Image 1 (tube, rainbow, N blue to C red):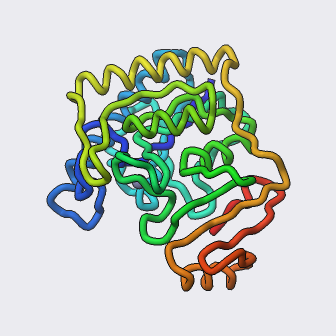
Image 2: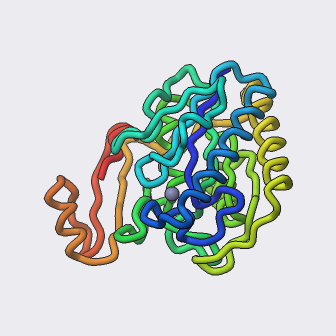
Amino acid sequence: MKIYILADMEGISGIRKPSQVDPQSAEYHGEGRTLMMREINVAIEAAFAAGADHVVAADTHASGGQVRIADMHPRAVYETPGPCRPMPSLDESFAGVILLGHHARAGTLDAFLDHTMSSASWFEFRINDQVVGEIGIEAAWAGHFGVPVIMVSGDHTTSLEAQATLGSVETAVVKRGIGRHSAACISLPQAHQIIAETTQRAVQRAARHEFKPFTPKLPADIQLTLYRSDMADDMTRQGWQRVDARTVRKTISTMTDMRW
Ligand SMILES: [Zn+2]
């Protein structure tokens, strides 16, 4: 059984201030990477323990680069997402995707570092009029290959969003957002135990085909609202149609055509 782990950074246990996810922060980003590595390896170990025989891990934060390859779990494979391919080797042969260390979509109350793709420019993203964040976008990508998202971890709002978007999915809560720029974290041993137990349950349920892929109706209407009208000007030059000053839309025939 093949399992794919797509790890972001904001929802990793122990990460509680923005500088820990900022590659420019020499002082704190290293600690964030260490915490991320430890949690990815906890999830990999749990996936193998629950019956996986092939585990791929990818680091989606800031275009990848957080993972220290020398510290990777010895049995896993590691890869880095491309700009238009969030999970490069994902295909129909995988039994499930785990979205580790994720965060709520832009505009969520008390969500640690809530955003959708870009904190600088994206206000709201919709697929067929359903507002989705990165959880929905990545789940729709996996759904194209018939692969369900089986587990999502992060703060409490991430868990709520995953359940609202995906329905039946295992979730692990490792922190509570206190406004956007602070989080209250449970201890690492406790968080890692929750990650391990939830991963094992999710993988065992995936083996029993208990999860459904997220498959928005096709062709799909995707709509992006930006913070300023000049940002939408830039998008129309890339083939998007104008809806209003800050919003653009396009019709796609397959979820793997989601590009920006
Ligand atoms: Zn991130």
